[in-house]
Length: 294
Image (cartoon, rainbow, N blue to C red; front, side, top):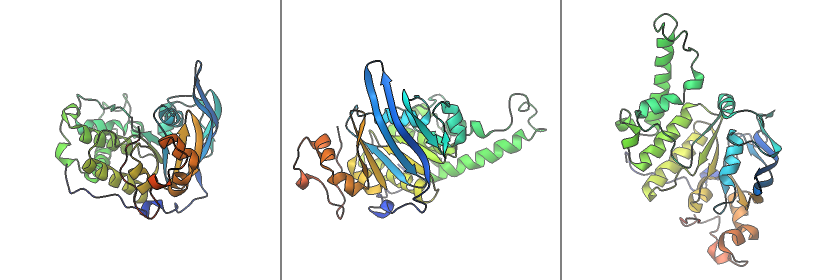
């Protein structure tokens, strides 16, 4: 782990985005069924440009299914999804990536036999203008100049995520925490306007989580990316999120600012199974304890 761990900015990331009225993504009445299984039921919400929006809920609540509907991996059975005011319900994941939606996966999806640098360069693929016809004419068609420009962009991402020391290493040989960082780097390389992070801190120790939380906050505040995050660590979610949506059995049961969601009795019942649990719920004035939700 390079560099000293930096804790997330408690409270600072909970300020409203600079343009709260501008919606970058909207889901309207989304239903998702697999045979007789209802993964999502009538889920509607909007994500504002420039905010850090978290989706939480118990295991099997439909969080990853919702992210898959946003990224295009799943197509809703009913309902519609909009990106930048455009109906993208029927578009492919490749098309949505070209429009500006990037993502990481709950299970690592790196090319283990390739170097870190090459894995990140894959994220630039849709931005390349040269193709298999013009690429062979490396010196004549601008392919070399284009590749160098993309390499410079990738090197900046490598510097940002502090993985310079493994840039030429084979991805499959890295530790779990570093591989999660490389996958985040590849998603950033897409230059997305909306980045989807599916459990970016799963399996990490405390130091790695603090580093990852810092990178996510910086992506949102300094790079201006709109972030949608699924995460089970409630301390991280409540520290860095602008707004939170809670799913239970595929249905939305709450949405709002972190402190509002924490105070919702339906959320407390879903997580703790009790009606009166105020002593267990952290207040907005004190950072919540790091608690893993099953």
